[in-house]
Image (cartoon, rainbow, N blue to C red; front, side):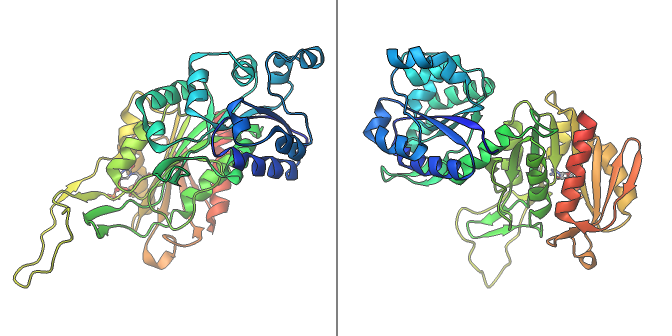
Length: 395
Ligand code: CTP
């Protein structure tokens, strides 16, 4: 990304201090940063510190005649590769969603012909407020890229979603936005990891999925330029930087999260979803009783893959996985038909194979045209091969 130019608009929030670190790291990665400060941002960081770090003049005023003669706000908004707003406040999001252009930042955001990436930062109540969530939906629909916010403790002392994403996460999102690979402009949904189905507040039903294959697939798709929404259960491996991350625990939550994702070109369902949930899960820890054993009443979880395949929102290409312990190809072929997906990646997860929870995979790819038996290889290698095949299929 060396030499790419970022127009960095710093909004007025306490997280503005992190933007100084963001500038430093962007420069270290070879980017050029053109900084813009909103009026309220100057309450948190000084133009001098921003300018000194960026090595550039800081733009602050819409009606700066000197600037207009050299570079007008229209040109400023376009002479870059990407516009990044970090932090973006609830107020600036509202302005963007409603098309206000009454200061330099909002005018640049209206005038630009480049992609815009925002990193929200605000109090948890403000983030969860219906107005902010409405504005967020509008911005997503307008094609604005969103990074974060993260969950955690805040400067105001409250806890929840609202912390600005860390500079490394914002840089990963910038790299994804600027990546011109064959999957550029494609939005891919990946489900990954196990689900946990609670028995009571301290116990749950789970499976041995580590999330390694789903994570490797998300990374391989990012590397080819895709935008990836990654819906993951409680996995052992960390999610890749640069994805739109949605963390869930149960199959029902995974289904809700998947249904909420809009405009998906490809869906890849790698998650090892629990087939059953406990309907009589207890709110309190179940105590041992000398006279009787607890009876767990199971109910079947909805099939997320089948639901997506049958829905009006079905992506152009849907890839399922099949975890089998016997008659792998025969069972997986039947699964492809039953669930209505285009491709199915079948693997033998018998304990002797070391595949579930391990670092290698041995898969057969089943499509409408037949089967491809891939040799045993690392999960990251399987991921790269699958991502390449998806790119070929779409292009
Ligand atoms: N899947 C899903 N929702 C479920 C169960 C499975 O989306 N409730 C998806 C998985 O992510 C995978 C595919 O369906 O892409 C097959 O999952 P698998 O566990 O192999 O099959 P099951 O449908 O659970 O069938 P069985 O356990 O009988 O093999």
